[in-house]
Length: 249
Ligand code: PGA
Image (cartoon, rainbow, N blue to C red):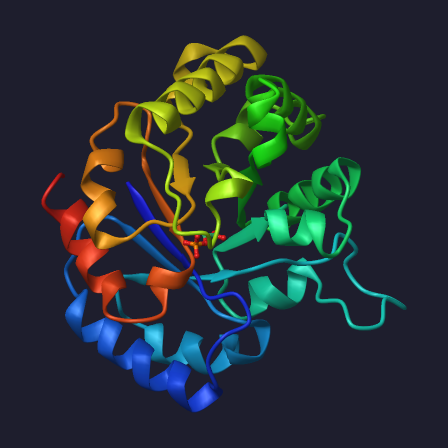
């Protein structure tokens, strides 16, 4: 199980440090992967606070080149050096606001893996696509393109996050059975592309309007292996979510 918090573009550095110090205390000893993905500029300070704790550092994005003339971008090597373990790639806000294509996302995933970190690969359909009955088609296409050129060893290092776009930041959470059927579909696609053993090992997280009152029902589904949380990762709700997972393992 993995609980990952995607802070997006929120908090000041002081607020970030204060909150992380609290999380380190309140989440101490929890026996599953807890990942904090703050904005880039807080990573270095937060890395210091997380030293010796059971919490892991994640980033929200990165570029796919090691270095060079790419104004405003951050390289995977820079993240690795700071102690980052996970990098969110292909979040729907990156796809829709910043125009990231499946091809760029595939390059970023490879760059993250080559730098020895784990990509959290985000996929999911829009409201319109769901209404047209295209959910499985979109998810399959995004996943196939994301994983293009990745071998079995690579697959052992990835995390997938199913985040229906219509559920992100809207307060409309997917019903547990709605999420489970897509997660099962993703698992079966991984089996087809690789093998059963590898497919079973890939954590598939759900994301989109997770809150303490809807989390349990999602987490008990057989193919849901954790959550990628936006809004509820910014305050004490994150601690409640962690306690829910803790009670399940
Ligand atoms: P939300 O965001 O929990 O605020 O809906 C989830 C995400 O974008 O990862």
